[in-house]
Length: 128
Image (spheres, rainbow, N blue to C red):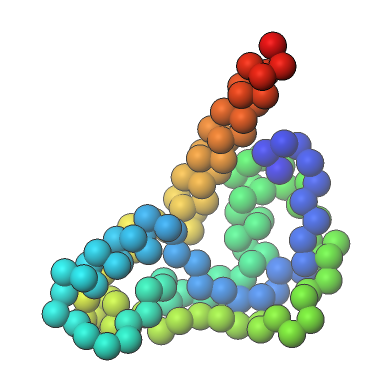
């Protein structure tokens, strides 16, 4: 989408549990600093459809017409629902994610824009 190219996707009906990488790191630090022992899921605990995620990406990039939901089939055998129970992380460890889905996507798009710009500059320098 950032390159102005179409993005073929599955229908996006899969439900997933998304957590920004900075929140994953923060959750691990909080867990290590806590007295909690045993298995603790590092997750948001909030179900979100893949469709909602890719539509938010397309909206923030400003290219919703390039998103082609349903252009690809869903993968055979892919589970429809993968969401963790994050109750121990929030109640026992006391960790709450800092990024919302919207802010996490915004930060990720910003990173990718910078990365693509860096790659373009490196390519120009190599050819110039």
